Length: 221
Image (tube, rainbow, N blue to C red; front, side):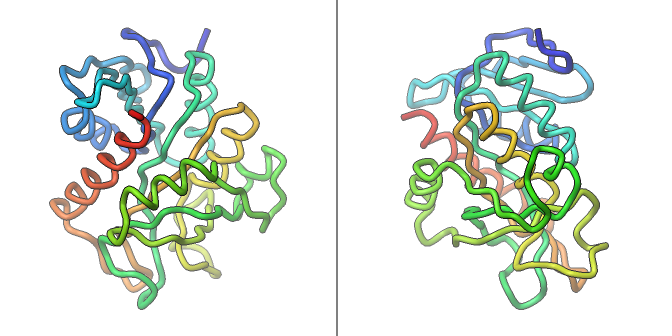
């Protein structure tokens, strides 16, 4: 049995993964018909239900950072999850992407110990599931751009070196998914820049809905 999640409703084979419990609630209301809370243990809110397209979908919060996300994913695997799409956020250097841009992750580079603990060398790139990634890019079209992301265990803003985009989950999450036999992909919202600029809450939620709808559409077919 899972050690962290305590499901109170059936878990679907397909899942949308988010760090923030509030984002899980927002996407559950946006994507599911009559969503049922499937987990509230440890503050990791999860919801399950049917999409308008008729597919079963789970939306699960993973908490902050790679260690939390990989543990949650392992529990989800025990509960039958076989495909997952991360809808997350990232920070970028000024002038590379604009606030609010959606980035479909083409590779996630390990820059922290949580990825290396899973057998990924520092600086090594972890690749997402190619089919899910291709379909995600196709679903979002011109509304998203392909990008590599560097994944750190502390806030990327504190790092001396920063790639095109940076987050705290994608590399370890993709590495863990690979080990578990789960097909996984990721789409990230640019919410911060190294210059201190940030996306307003309403704009973040608008982008979350867009990315979530794309993920749901792919996982529902």
